[in-house]
Image 1: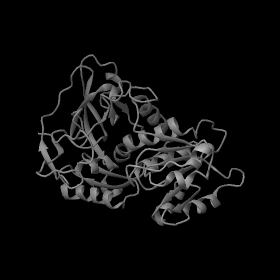
Image 2: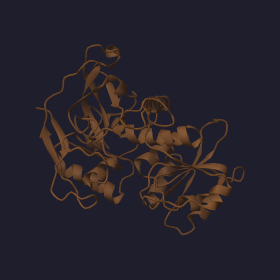
Image 3: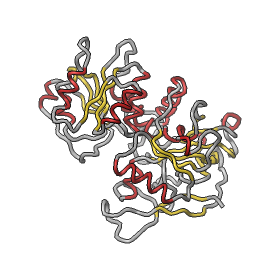
Length: 370
């Protein structure tokens, strides 16, 4: 019988005070309904959302539905009435990690009532930490041919989040003839790395911050023009010294931490520059300064994204032959100790790139290779 990875409910599950254990359960193999597909999952990847779920710091948690939103697999069955059966059957696909948002660039069309990431979510029963999953055919796209299963699993949620922040929100790639300056904070995390790869592919000059010098050097190897340690009291002044004389300002900031990012970067940004915040790991509040008002700085919140943005992002990855960065892979859905180790990597911030579970490793995509 197929297996799935879920959370085990324990007493006293107070937000932030609990860490729900993982468990493997037997589940029936799904059958496709009309316009559904059944995907055999080859690899699935973790996100910070999954760590927050285990700590009960995320809304709408399900203990019955499988974990994880990121997945790469092969379509094994197609339901009746499919408009794309010949294109999808027996083909490798990526799952859209967020459902209920079609295409409106402003936000989900129904105000977010049906919008949710999949994986341990109350709203949708799909999750990628299982051997087979049934999903609507419109929620999968053909995987870029150059990606391994682990690389494919590493892409969806961070790719979608980074794409919306950089492309939809920041305006930094609107004119390909202008090599804009973009700051991406907290390099090493999945969204930040994907934003780096996208921005470099668009021709931007990218600068990064990290608390780890090794991560700064690795970011330069991926195309970053420079980086500074956020532990330095004057990191913003150090960054200013790195900017090119012909364009000595930032056009946009892509940030996942919050904190004092507005105060630190306002004087570095051009008038009318943009700060896009897709997360606030430092705390749930941040300061907005009068200096930013006087400089006409735009502060924009950014979430994951729409189905349209997901498809555009995957097309870009295919066209530019981008390979998502994979930090570590463990093999086996029932390898709970090793999977817990991935969560520990995320807790401590050790990872540089994505943390992946190889559920059904494919040729050339073994855990030992990565």
